[in-house]
Length: 232
Image (cartoon, rainbow, N blue to C red; front, side):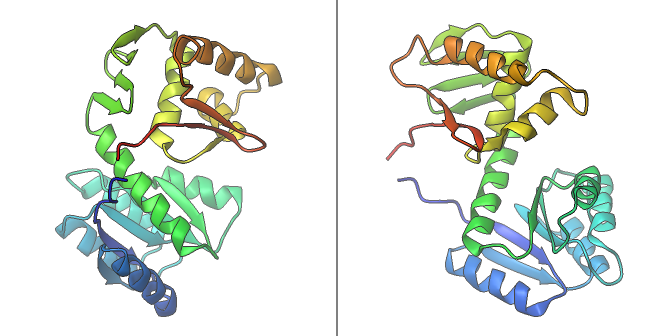
């Protein structure tokens, strides 16, 4: 299988034991780590160096993670993926983190293996998002023109089908829960419970039915993901 890329990661975390555990684990995996324990220091490093990812704690001395993330989004000359870490797990805290510009959110305690998977997924998603044309296994997606082809054959999607596909592409290889997918499609507006099921069914008929192998995978009891065969 293709080896995971080496990432240059900034950890902004005031609990030294947590920061040390993260750094040792990720360095052992081949990633390059920088460290800051205060908000202003982390912001300065993020703005003055090139990082593939920032792991940012929410509770920091000097400037909290929400403010650090806001300043990164306002002042950085490029989009730096930000993974927010916090002991808080309320919906309000998560919303606050995402509104500040965070790309993902992980609640303490967490497994170091999951942390690395999320870092790799965020970095990969960011690289995909910098291009209008995305090639993912047999899929070729033109984000600007909103077109899809599979194995070189055009697949005509309606607006909702393309939106669902892009949510799955942006999250790949992670699973998107039904509730998260519904929120991304309809926001806080209520919708009938069968609406999502109907749209997924229509998307599968177009993307999977004419082909030998399905790429839209249902993870029962959880949600949906793309099942893409990786090159050896």
